[in-house]
Image (cartoon, rainbow, N blue to C red; front, side):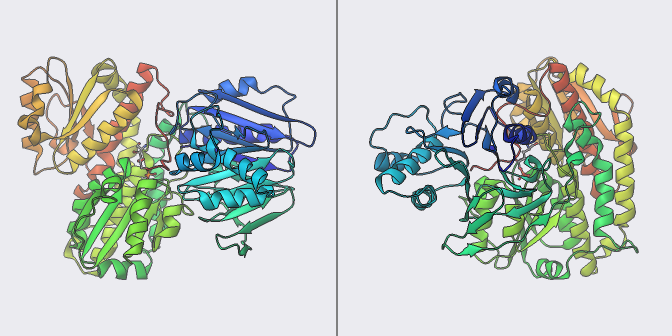
Length: 603
Ligand code: M6R
């Protein structure tokens, strides 16, 4: 969602901000803007649409040693130049960028703005004018007015503010939306994530909810919600600028799909010792073992990863597992077990829907674990425990390697618990070896990607709708496959429990409707084949993705055989490639699908 970059102390602020905004593009946006200033001049430039529209307006005289930039994902008001950030107050004194949602913006407008005409429809424009009104009416300094406005605000925000009358300070504040401080040489930066600043520094200071700060080129001053000064040390991030480059790949999504075998191998290096025994924090394991029921809470692809591991998790741990969509759980909480344990699956670690649930379960005093790709993220910090997916930055909006890493790490966790319980199923499961084999199998599937390109052309490229069907874990992969296809190719796709089709949905099958069947389970293979026959008889164009040991003549995509606990790692790969190639063929931007954001920081 919205991305923020700011800097103070570098003459080429505009260039640095633009680079930062490019690095934030992956988060999703529909307009962008930059404000830069020095003691003599200032410039505010905004443009709807792609960042290139903004870049074209940035002439060489637009320079400054302080500035803020923003990519906006529209919430209040259409994507337009007026609604793009930074927002300038009507009196021209303050310039503000914001990521989040101000829930009481209409009340603030009514209380403070006295009918003042605004340029657009955003909540942020109201806030910048509230700051200006407070500074004028109550004769407050910029910092005092900013603080006072924050006291009045309900909602989520990451703010960066400049006082145009004194462009020697950058004011920042955070509540529920991500914001990180970058410590450069003779400069400070601020950004929605480390990627936005990694071209200038790899040293960062975390900002926590309720904190507010002032940055100058040499100094950083932070205070908490109670006005107490904070002295927080910087940490060095492991992410390198090269990690977030595409290299020779045309799209991040393809790069990330191809990285999946190495992500599995990195998990093996991270979570196993030299004897191939799992190494996961003992206290976490004990607390999980003491739980009566495990609740996995997640959204989108991460939710599908939760579903795809539920059966194995229950088998290996003998603890019941429920998987919930965070946005539903937050407002319709089920009756909880007496000793619940919550697992939050989130690539970004910033998803507002999941965080909303975490806040509630923390209030209940329930123990929790966040499994995320971003170790310092909000969900990681606020849960009792955190485990890293070690997948490396995932830039494409469509999540791929985070999914497989979540499935693999959940399996490692389940195995560790089962082993601690002496579950005989664990003795019969050489998880290290089986995961190594799964990584190799993924590679084998990737070698055959040309065949999937052809299949995408033959089955999907010109279609308006598609079905993925399967049973059990194949059904859960079908859900993920359909999400992947629809989010980037805009083909309406549905993941369906194969046996459920005949109870209504089969009415949608007509001549040439693509139906993609997933078969990796001995128990259900015959039934899924039966369901595929049913749709074929009604004209469907059937593509079968099948594990090689269950293959029959005419099946198009054959998967190497992996351990039954790990089939969701391999069967998802061809579906990712199908989505990728179908999207290419339809001429859309694979990495930046319309309307979507990588990190969904609003509820
Ligand atoms: O960062 P998270 O894993 O919490 O994000 C959850 C979903 O927004 C995310 O998985 C989304 O569904 C993906 N873009 C799908 O590819």
